[in-house]
Amino acid sequence: MSDRLPGSLRAYRLLSVAARPLAPLLLDARRRRGKEHDTRLMERRGRTGILRPEGPLVWLHAASVGELASVLPLIERVAAAEINVLVTTGTVTSSELAGQRLPRDVIHQFVPVDVPRYVRRFLDHWRPDLALFVESDLWPNRLIEASRRRVPMIMVNARLSEVSFRRWRLLPRAIANLLHRVDLCLARTNGDAERLSALGAPRIVTAGDLKLDVPPPPCDGTKLAALHAAIGTRPVIAAASTHEGEEHAMIEAHLRLKTLFSSLLTVIVPRHPERGPSIADLACRRGLATCLRSHGKLPAPMTEIYVVDTVGELGLIYRLAPIVFVGGSLVPHGGQNPIEPAKLGVAIVHGPNVWNFAEIYAALDRARGAERVENADRLVAELAALMTEPATRQKLADQARATVAGLSGALERTLKEIEPYLLQLRLVNRHA
Image 1 (cartoon, rainbow, N blue to C red):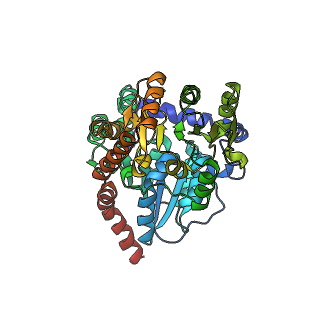
Image 2: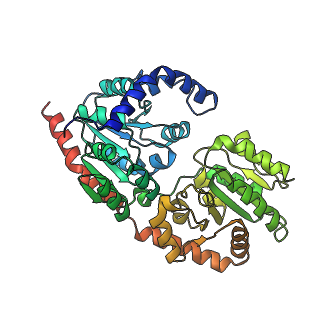
Image 3: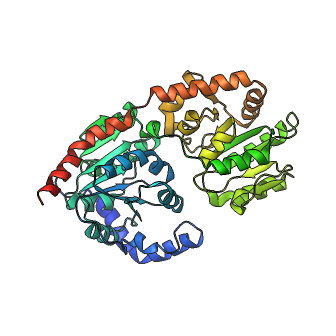
């Protein structure tokens, strides 16, 4: 394609160049708030102390924890084909997940800030032969600089919400220019495919949602046994991946439910662990005995709210609590992933704002594999009903597991589509 940029992208490029002197200040401010890694800030400027390995290299970028978790099986399959893999992410929590779950020989780096000089420095060092971008993290300088080096780019598990679609339609030439640089879009759903096509993506295949093929999150058996021993026979409910406002709803729900279940323990797992102390403070102000998992504590007999402000322990909580409210759905965020609790046989409750996973939630709701609540009052009523009706709760969990199992297959379809690119890398390497 022509490398002539529309005015909006030229303006973005100029602004990002002009903003470069401010980037170190911004990164340092984020570091002080715990949003950047203390010793790895240079990676955000495209620098690294790690040598590029010999041979073909696939660069896979996943913005945050959810995106990275969804492509771990894909990374494992590519790495098993004896191709070097570089994974970049943009958050501290995703780097912790990478350290825990990536195959041993896969390299992890923080993605450079979308400043032309930083992106060029990154690409000049790593020289990727293929780039896989997960979901919808389309930063202009990243795509422009990669395409200028003729790096084939594929969007995997590509998604585009209605909200993002409407925003991009305000800049039709910009998004069309960016999408035309992408060789292939492997869309999660037909709806995502239609929206990407309408914005100008030239080649799209609906491969399905990779999150549906991810194994259930792992669990440390020793830690689970310790929690079971600490809790005993107490009734437990959990709220997973909550956002601001939802913790207040769960705390109020606990206050109302404990009149029926006096020994109730409510577990809250915030989407952003750094919010743990403020959530604990909110619960304490309501007179509830609270403790933080990040302090190394187990719930005591008198603990009422247990805040799990740690990374990578949702698998533990889903095996502990028979009922889970999945967050990001009572507030206008778009909902968090319901697939993991469904695979682990949990009864799922969610709010109305689930456009990030619209098709999956719709399938779960149709099959009566999840219960939708419109507000905090209905949340309390539904939690109470599920706690008092174990047969209903079990049926809900069984339907969720069956629904998710019936929607799987995206991993094999994705591998089938990217295999020609991987084969080309192997052939070039063989004749090098």
